[in-house]
Amino acid sequence: MASMSLLCNWVSQRPCNRYFTPFSDESPLHVLKPNPNSLSSDELRVYTDDANKFQITIPQEWRVGTGEPDGGFKSVTAFYPEEAYSTSNVSVVITGLGPDFTRMESFGKVEAFAETLVGGLDRSWQRPPGVAAKLIDCKSSNGLYYIEYTLQNPGESRKHLYSALGMAFNGWYNRLYTVTGQFLDEEAEKYSSKIQKACMGASEAA
Image 1 (cartoon, rainbow, N blue to C red):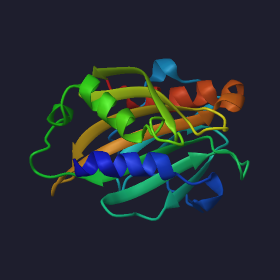
Image 2: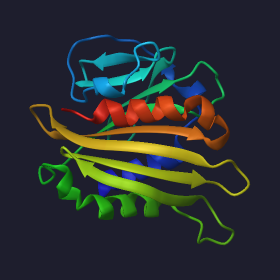
Image 3: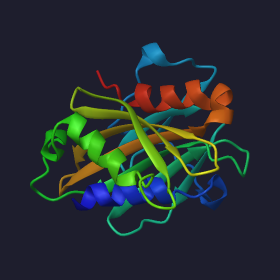
């Protein structure tokens, strides 16, 4: 499955925040809508991208950057703290889909989708062992898939990730929107709540 392979590659190879190009744009269209019950106005702000037709709620002080589209990626937008070498961030990756993919269930049920995604990242069975990927939770709600999992390279800190995935039609073809937030265990106290609100709150459309 091409879109799943692209997503796995992006997650496993995602660069440090210093490699994103600073970018800023505020416009009024949206695909992903914030849940007002999960937001604190003094901590978060709404970012809107009319060109790519999405809206997401991010930490107030975070920067916005763009990455170079690669392969099947149509757009990569990242939101990250000012610390240049922090790996904590939230990203929105847009991937083009074939005509057979009309809703998230086209990928299969959320449990199978999550197992395939996380299983595709896991290399703990290799000798020597590679990255260990573990599925924590998954659910489907309002046409969106939510996945929580961890990644850990041998000898390195564990990385916690939240992903929310949904589809939208731009008039020409369907696109898969993947919102993923990540933070290291040692940054959990500082970023966990903000990243979870940004990923899960931004995608819980009414």
